[in-house]
Length: 167
Image (cartoon, rainbow, N blue to C red; front, side, top):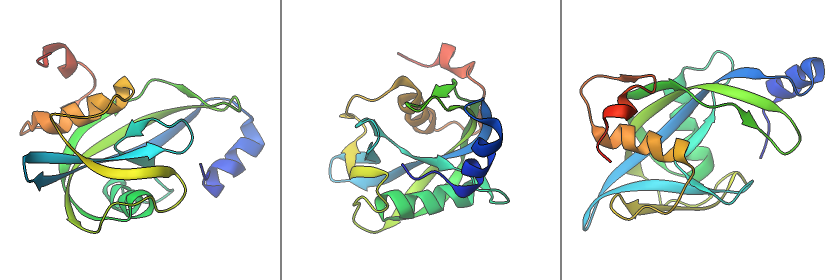
């Protein structure tokens, strides 16, 4: 996975210590022949399916990062409809020992154009799945999709809403 230069610069100073970063997740929906579909990418680093996710660059608005990441990772054009969920992820420890934690901005996005294909090496596959037949994926990614599909009028804040979500 390509690491942004600003993170490489930080890592040169702090080593593997925890970095607090801003993240953007684009849960991309479209109307399919049999109902709503969500775009997922298979991550090159661990082979897991996930919505499009990425790090917000310094000075970049999170919704712009979601649009950029959709183009880079899946070669699609999207429109951000709204912020669906703002939360803090669990800490992530990478194979090299780097530790990060993200304030994640999960956006409900609408597919506009483009056939999904991996674009920048961060994904090995990209395709739409019916929301009723999603592949297995880590809990944190599944929760982001669930937050968007809940389609609440208000932005969900934190993890408390998960207690009340239908199973």
